[in-house]
Structures are given as C-alpha cells and as structure tokens.
Amino acid sequence: MKTKPTVFYLKFTPEAQEDVKTTAQYYEAQLAGLGKRFRMEVRNQLLLVKQNPFSRAIRYGSVRFAVIDKFPYSIHYTIHQQQITIHAIISDYRNPKEYWKHND
Image 1 (cartoon, one colour):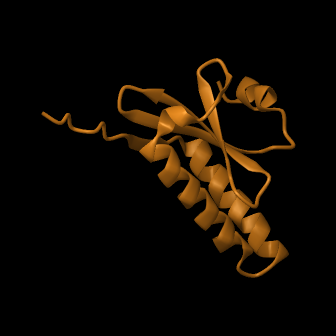
Image 2: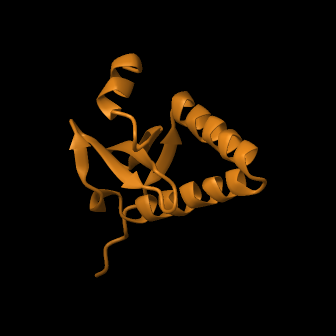
C-alpha cells in the first residue's frame, strides 16, 4: 500500500513579502525586466523548497536557507509540521543574525 506524500504549504511573513517587493523594485530600477526575473527566480526556488523542504541546510537555530539562482539572495525559512514559513529573503552580503535581532 502506497502512502500519500506529505503536502507542504508556504506561509510568508509580512517581512518576507516586503523583502521580495523591495528587492524586485530595486532590481527593476537597475534594469527593466530584472525585477521580474528576480521574482521568477524566487518563485522557482520556492517550488523546489516546497517539494523537498528538508533538503536545504540548517543555517542557524532551526532556520534553513535556499540560495536563489543568479542573485546574491537566500530564502530563510522554518518548517513546522506541514507548514513552511518564509521569514525573509536576505542578501547574502548581510549577516542574517543581524537581521533576526531586529525581526524577532
């Protein structure tokens, strides 16, 4: 008898939504279409995370991260039961521990 695969659900914090919005706006201001490309790369990485959320490394505490292709950003998330909470989309040049100090 086959077991039903676990379905994971994505939940975005308001901060994560704002991270995507402001970063896409920044890239769009640099070059037309680049903001859209950033959003597409974020979406692609989120689909992969949703398919196999435990495949990404734990970076600190229980927070995992997924690197966004072609952009120096990572998706920082936690898993609780079937929910994947997206906490932030942070530039790889920033110290994530500093981010969490301000957003606890």
